[in-house]
Image (cartoon, rainbow, N blue to C red):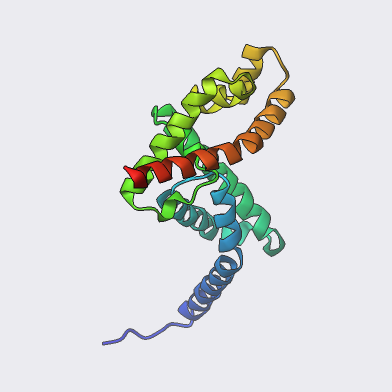
Length: 192
């Protein structure tokens, strides 16, 4: 037997329905920007999906406190913080971040496991080849030795801004070289 609806429950149910509709609209409007921001951190597809859910769950729980004109800014801030927290958790557990961070040019998410393994091996090989290149020293320190920008600055006795700038330039410079190396290693795997 259905329970009768009291006059006190009607406003609460209407508020829940309005909140759900507001959330669904905000999700539809902003899920793309959250996913785009997460892609810039180069997580796996599973990590991106998990973080997207976590971010929108946080948003749902805080929705009443957020000004409707500041939803996008809130989501971008939460996205950035959630991504940084994931990196910190993984680093504290000693997980290797090097390969994930160097998939900037790859579409590895769509590759089968065997191709992904070959690709990771090729990226590691590429990083190993950079050890002898003095211009790539900052990339090696950042990705291979997993030092932070401040640690690199202290080690090289240069400012943090200089290291950040050089790191950005090195990424741009070696992006094409990495793509070429991956293409070459893929061709070699087809020949074998």
